[in-house]
Amino acid sequence: MRPQELATRIDDAEPKTIVSASCGIEGIRVIEYKPLLDQAIALSSHKPTSCIIRQRESCECELTEGRDVSWQDAVAAAKPHGCVPVMATDPLYILYTSGTTGVPKGVVRDNGGHAVALRWTMQKVYDVQPGEVYWAASDVGWVVGHSYIVYGPLLNGNTTILYEGKPVGTPDAGAFWRVIADHGVNCMFTAPTAFRAIKKEDPTGALLADYDMSTLRSLFLAGERSDPATLEWAEEKLGVPVIDHWWQTETGWAICANCLGIEHLPVKHGSPSLAIPGWDVQVVDEACNQLPAGTTGALVVKLPLPPGSLPTLWNDDERFVSSYLTEFPGYYKTADAGYIDEDGYVYVMSRTDDIINVAGHRLSTGGMEEVVARHADVAECAVIGVADELKGEIPLGFLVLNAGVDRPFHDIVSEVIQMIRAEIGPVAAFRTAIVVERLPKTRSGKILRGTMKKIADRTEWKMPATIDDPVILDEITERLQAIGYG
Image (tube, rainbow, N blue to C red; front, side):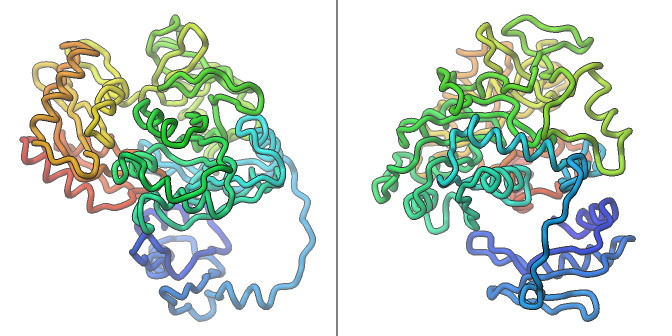
């Protein structure tokens, strides 16, 4: 995160104390945090009273006299303190999620409902019993980290693992298998993008043979749509149930899932299964009319929301109402598009902004990605809608290939185009795809399709505060310009 974005959050939350570290480790990179924090505080109108800094051996930092205290010194001088009772409705934390206006939204989580929901889901959704080992391989700063690295497992009496590393490169694509084997993990939760990265580097899953995976009972995926090809690969290689489930920063826990602790339902690839108890998911059109089974529309949740979901936005009740409760009266707007089939299975196809209009036909980019991902040489893909004078919008594909693929790129692109034409039809107007080394993502694994679209359309865009590696956007821009976009 750049100093300006952090300063915006400091001004909104007005913290008395900021806890940070001298640096973080990203694979082989050491990233200095303290200079970023100092710049952010200098830019912010609100000034914290103190900062507690965890000095790390990889890169110790200078402390600002009179403001900064080292974590090590603070712990050494600390005295035990009893628990402090709070109201169930008191705020537990604020977690910022990007807003469409560029102003971050501070999602508020309460204490009581949050604890009830997470304790219930550990056993009913994830089928994890007290004393077992649970691993959410996420960034602790994201909602998954809050809900299922810290609070959920500890409320349920589980061992929880904090992992500072990547699915690949630390040191190889067997990093996850090593952690599972070393710690006897029973249930794992990660993002589909992590498994796409593993599949890209080790398509045959050869590294699995080096580790004892016998303790693993299930794998849960969330954070980015789980394309069937990735899910099937994980099922085949791991030999355990692989469960896609759908939720958001705002909800705090899953909206839809195959609840292994209640009943292991048949898996339908491409669907996070049924709505979990407490969530009444429906599909409506722009006029808020319910749509029949199989028809794509806006995915909404009938009010009231269950425990654990956001009660408001920090210091902005009006924005909470306008962002989530106004467009579809009586419903919470998820801003996701999809459909529900005849069996009640929910299919989350894309963000509503990713539904593109091709010559009057409303098409899902998620549906196209699902087809492209099935190509044997494609490790990961993204499809965006770009402006077109004749059709309004046309799809443009981005392909990341598996390691070791040495076929001509144009042959692979031609095959992908034919797959779209055969499965979706000529109406999709899918005629162009480019091969790239990697896709731009947030630290939680979401592909930055909106930013890619703005670059392609030559419209003004800002560097997303949550981007994992800004250099990737330069690479994407270069590839787009080579084919006449951007």
